[in-house]
Length: 423
Image 1 (tube, rainbow, N blue to C red):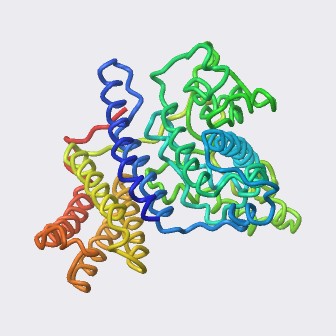
Image 2: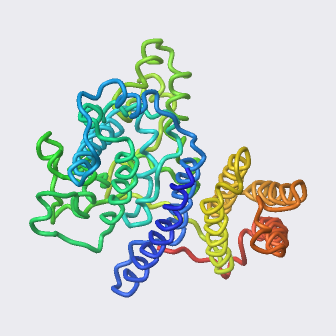
Image 3: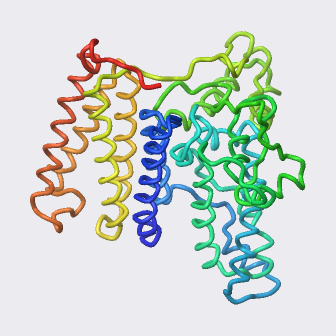
């Protein structure tokens, strides 16, 4: 856990700089693909995902170590070939899991967040799930276990395999020539994220594209079919925590509402988007029918609120950086309290971004929780080792957050004359 935190301390600022560079590059070239609120929502989603991982809030019914101990028919030492084998096996497992996430109602809930942005950029790559608590598909690493690939190799290759999927989430890189035949490129993955009928449920590959070509799920990007991004049932919120459970919430309501016991049971394993006929008729859900004629989700806000949003993002990243760098100091159960605080931070902040009428309640709750921790413990999870003054700056921040939560709510986030919408 501590080692993973150290890796994230390096990876997180790297990803952030690349996201900001893409925003600047798009502005410079006159082809912007990054909207500010959408970007902040994506980055916040990434924070919740890695917080969940550091807290260890997911378990595997069957661990790779168990497979290795019980099923290995040989043992191989760690070498460059071992890492190659592990990487290929992980990529095939990723392809299968990815396909299941798109095709089965129950599993789509854990992937919906990744496709929820109506833009396609590096930031949306960070929209990862917090809704998956049980990992069911470790069994797909069976080939590696049979070959006796050490668990330490898998532990190293797995995060590298995940991080290697970041770069191709961009619209600024075109066709890459012969690379298109081997690896997943931005062109391939733009197709995967598109909701055009020609592109739906294609290109599940994560690093290698030949899985799709072998199993008939490949689709190249067509020059006369511009990709349109998002999900056909738009999420209509910047709140990543809400997005994580929207689909599951609909499944639960549909299973409860349908009069058919057969439908109550089979809804979970049906193709993604399937709903019982009686429920679909009585409780219709908006779905995009014409991908070229719908309004993207956006919110109006003042320049003051925009500045506050950037500031909140910076503070969020500072809080999470302290967590990653000081896991041993924070310890248990402190790490779980800290994680809950981060989730509350993101929820309260994104409710303000959505302009929800009662967002100030969440803002006050967030500030009160922070102040409560400071007064109850006399410190901020051991941060005084850096400087005794830091906790006082944090206390001032929480009081300012409480005041501004009220101010933005009661002034509707600024003067009407100062309102604008970022396109």
